[in-house]
Image (tube, rainbow, N blue to C red; front, side, top):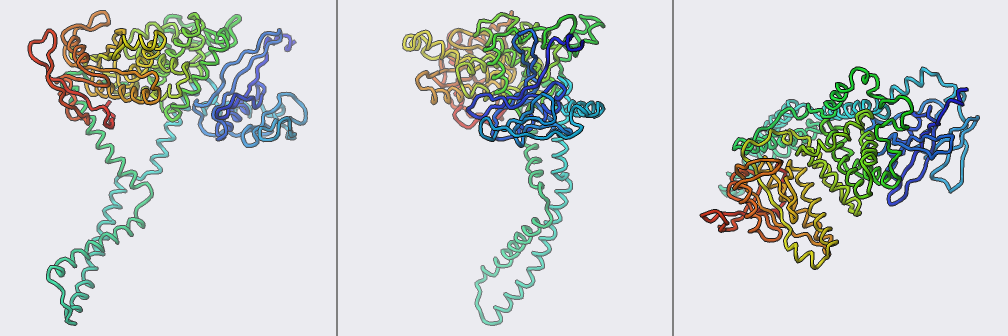
Length: 637
């Protein structure tokens, strides 16, 4: 009777991909063997020969419907160390095998490293999975949930927090306290000084003996021998004592201490810039939890009945197999595969950051994936439910609760109206567009974009009156269209848009509008504005060096001052002057006004005097300065 009530069977299937290779199936486990399946995935992920690993939850239906797959785990999602196989289980990793889900006294393990078709048998130990204690199974599952390997968003959050705590503890244990390092340094100094002082006496005796034998030593040499010998003795004894008394990691502690002082000084410089009228830092950025706010909002709208179903995705009646409001099973196969591939590559660029992301950072990553999913849906001609299905599957894979995936997608248009959220969405769109075009560096800016989104400096109050207005302009756009045709010209515009929007997202800029031949944006921080334009020109130069057949030549202008904001646009003299400064620049130049240059005084940004220019509507010539963007860029935001 139980078998008759079953509507599907669930298994876990492991796929691995070698560099420049295709996905290859490596093993399959029954639903009850989730522990072994996750262990196998983790072990395979640790093997150098695999570039990526994906464990899929496969539901097979007896009525002939196509199997449905959802991600159970994939490369890039945090895991808290290796997990051990429980008694009698088979783990993929060392021998690279997978196990058959069927019964019997032996289980067949497919050898990845052996010749095709060769199989070896491994005897199952008595009391294996079928005879294991249910209590032990429960304990194993709890351990895996605590490790962040299974259990959805909560376990991912625990894993991220545990990983960050372990890293902090490791740093504390590996590095001695600063006070202990200073104490050892002082000890080395005192002992070396004493040794050098004692060494002075045999030197004096040696010189006296030479004098009594009649050896003539010039007076200036006599005056210098004693101090030189003292310094030599001090240096040699200091080096020897350092090897003996100093501990491993002491130099690193000193270096980090000096670097932190330098960073504090840089922060003070940036605070000075904000004191000039560009707003205030908001210090509570780390406590922001937009997804938590969304969950509270959904719970308040649904009432108390929703609390019991918050983590289950609202299962009731006949829910979709994924448990999501927008089932990814309804998405066409090719776009869905492309979205998962995009997710895999994006996670691979931020693996070191993922476990450290706070709630705001995870929300930013959700926005990035939402922008990517929206761009892919438009490219593939998909409707909104299909778009939301791709987005839901991607954000759930990185830890978002299933019940929150649908409401997040429903608020997509609302997030687009927020300037900070829109920057992350546009960055995701740009990355997806480059991914579709086969650009291998589509995700290169993601680590910096995430850092910018989550930094306290990004979480700033809106500028009160003073803004930095930026215009970009594609040089020779009319001639470019004539030479390249509409298709080639559009490709140039897309490249410009992607590079500019990535830089805006990384340096907290807000895109106001697309002008057709360029982009207008505003910043609250002058240093960030200039740094952003430098990155734009540097990335454009790299593109032009690699893609000489489709060069993208851009000029940029910046001006700072008061501006009137109305209906998501800015107006006034400040905006007009910024546009005119941009017009005065030549290809690959960045021109700024005196007001912008004054606001970034103290930063390591170099300017060249470009002269005074007559500007329409302004009586006196306006002094303009060129940013030396080809010099090495130092982070200022």
